[in-house]
Image (cartoon, rainbow, N blue to C red; front, side, top):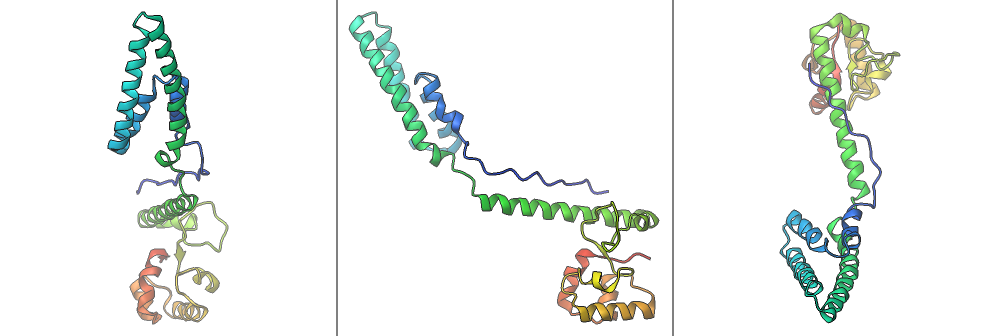
Length: 221
């Protein structure tokens, strides 16, 4: 049996992408700025961001050298440079964050969720068809292809052409009320169909409808 594919839950768009990354310079007093920019430079393969990371790295190295010189004047200069790097790195990170971590377009997320749901429904139909082939009696008991009846089993939208009432045949793609009436009349005369090809020929259905109907039609006996 086909393994069940479950669509992921719809997650509302968030504006928090990269927020922790932007806080790195502030939380590390500027010493983490080179590493945070190097991270996004590697991730995005950006020479520009790589140059930015290198510049902050040189600044941090100079700061540590000045503060470790042992001279009060140089130590004060190093402290001042550290403060500048701290503030500059923090402001810079928050300024470029929207371009590095752009917000996901809500419409894109909705479209992807719709695709995931459609794939999930397709897999349910494949599972139901496999069950019909393996155990037709169980398929009947589960009411596969019978959206007109109460049931617990989700077959992904299958329609049992041989048993559903005329209005339910309208769930098949392209089946108008006139075509549904024609299918019901032929079904009464010959006792049902065995395939979508036989259905198309005996009920004289338009050829362009066959592929869509084949996706959802089943023929239980």
